[in-house]
Amino acid sequence: MANVNHEKIEEAIRMILEAVGEDPEREGLLDTPKRVARMYEEIFSGLNQDPKEYFQTIFGEDHEELVLVKDIPFYSVCEHHLVPFYGNAHVAYIPKNGRVTGLSKLARAVEAVSKRPQLQERITSTVADSIMEQLEPHGVMVVVEAEHMCMTMRGVKKPGAKTVTSAVRGVFAEDHRTRSEVLSFIKN
Image 1 (cartoon, rainbow, N blue to C red):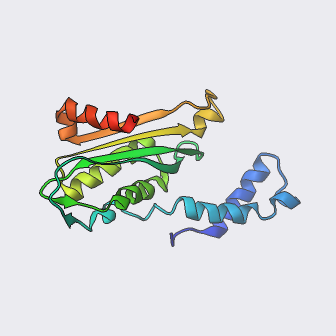
Image 2 (cartoon, one colour):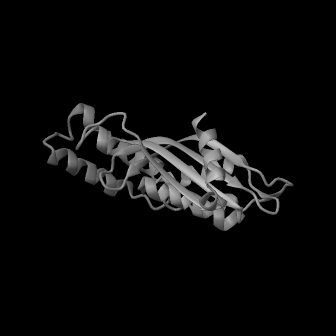
Image 3 (cartoon, helix red, strand yellow):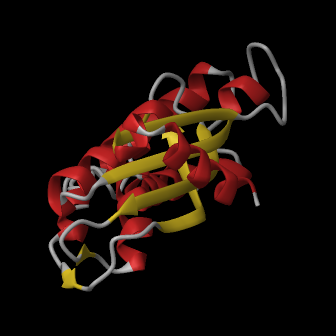
C-alpha cells in the first residue's frame, strides 16, 4: 500500500499514548509508534485493491453445479471503533456457461475486501456483488460469521457473541431450496 504515511501514523500514536496518560518515551513504548505504522500498512493493505480483479481469470469448465469454499478465515478492523473483528466467510456460487474461477480467488477476494477499515455487512455484499459482476453465475451466496472486539472488549462486553451476515444473489435469492442446500453444507 504505497499511500501509507508512516511518519503521520507514528505521530498520531505518540499523541494517543500521551492523551491516555502514558509516556511514549518509556522503554516499552519507544518503538510502538513504528510498530503500529508497519502493522497498519499490513492490515489495511486492501484499501487499494479491487476484489473484482481476482475474477479476471475465468476458466471454461462444463460445470453448472454448486461451488462452495467454506471456513475462509479473515480479520478486519471495524471502521466505527478501529478494533478488530474476525471470523470465517463462506462463499458459494453456481457457474453459468462454464465460467468458473480458481478456488483461491474466492479467498483472495475476501481478504482484499476485509483488509481495510470495514463493516461486516459491506464485506459480505461486496464479495457477492464482485462475483456476480465478473463471473455472471446463476447465483451467489456469501455468509460471514465474525466476533467483533467492539462488543467483546467494550460496550456490551459479550465475548463469544457472533454476528452473521449473508448476501444472496440470483438463484439463491429466488429458490429457498437452493439456499437451504448451501446453508446445510456450511453447517456441516
